[in-house]
Image (tube, rainbow, N blue to C red; front, side, top):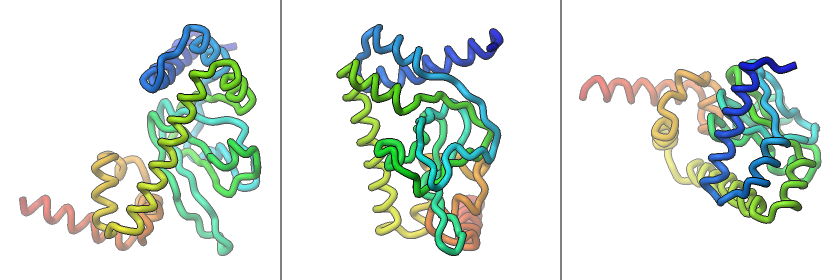
Length: 208
């Protein structure tokens, strides 16, 4: 049974997500109540696997607190980080969740995290029952793909230093939260290269 504190936390988390959706499109009271009824809060520890390779993602996770990474593993067993996700982001394998096929990637928490969960069947029911929620879902999916295109363009166009600068501009506290090895993997560079970039950046700041 949930205690009062957990109920307060859960209600607060749901309100955060409802407000997030409301900023995309107006929602009726019926839709708000349906989302409240079909979502639930979980707390997971650091290094918890939310989705593994060859699993089918049955739920999406709204990050209320914490950090999640998505990564792939090559034939030699080396993992490459494709996404770093924080508060306000969705932890999802778009391919696995929407196709309901086996995942090629892993979703892993990088910090103790608080997540609001919505499962696939309930999401499909919301789409069928509330046309306005289809619009919200479309905007969220478009946002995901735009971010993916931005990251691909960064890897193609910008230097390692520029990619790091852009990341720091978006997430100023990322170095305090995420191991450098994972950050370097996300940026598509070696950890030694990242260390040199950071050392040069700190030296430049000191001169100023």
